[in-house]
Amino acid sequence: MKKQSKRILLLVGVCSLLMILSVMAFFQSSMTLTNPFSTGEAKVYLDETFDVDDKWVPGEEKQKEVSFGNEGDVPVVLRARFTPELTLADGTKVTDTNILNGFTLNYAASFASEWAQHDDGWYYYKKVLNPNEKTSQTLVSVTISKNISNDIHGNETDYSGAGMDVDIECEAIQSSTSKDSINLQNWDVYPVISGMEVSWIKK
Figure 1: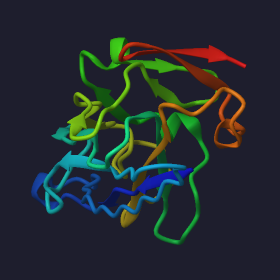
Figure 2: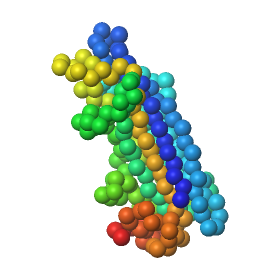
Figure 3: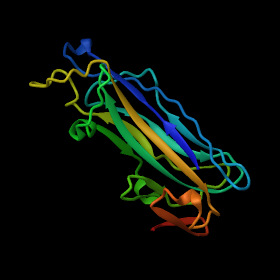
Figure 4: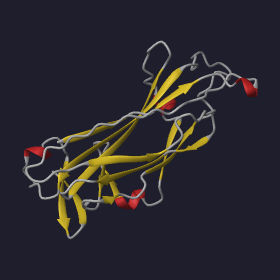
């Protein structure tokens, strides 16, 4: 099974132009992908649009467009997961969900109808992704909360130099994979395909 990992780094700093201690951020990305298929070759890729040098301050919404494509030669079904993480400058991982929820991932209007969310935290694509096809946009932008800032009264956490990662994981399986395939052993659901439409059924 091929697993795609995507990391976006937002470096948070002091916004001197506003004369307050606010958070600024940058994006950085990397991606690798491999998929084991019995026949043919699958090359599922992540297509994204954003400005890696763009600086952010709390309350701002920035463009971050993400979709997935299949440049291989076999049709696939896929799932994706979007997980925000925040690491302070001293390497401490922030586990407070109130803080992590301060980074809002804004999805496309069609996302809810084209992807099925399940209890395992993954979103499952409701269509077969054929070779040379792309999904519609999933993520379209990210908003940073005004509360993630050093100028909030009583805030004892220093967010200067903190790193915000949005891990985008994508796993794809050949659409002809059987329900009992070992490739589906870590998936809580399995695909039932009718034409190009996919229904995801709980195991």
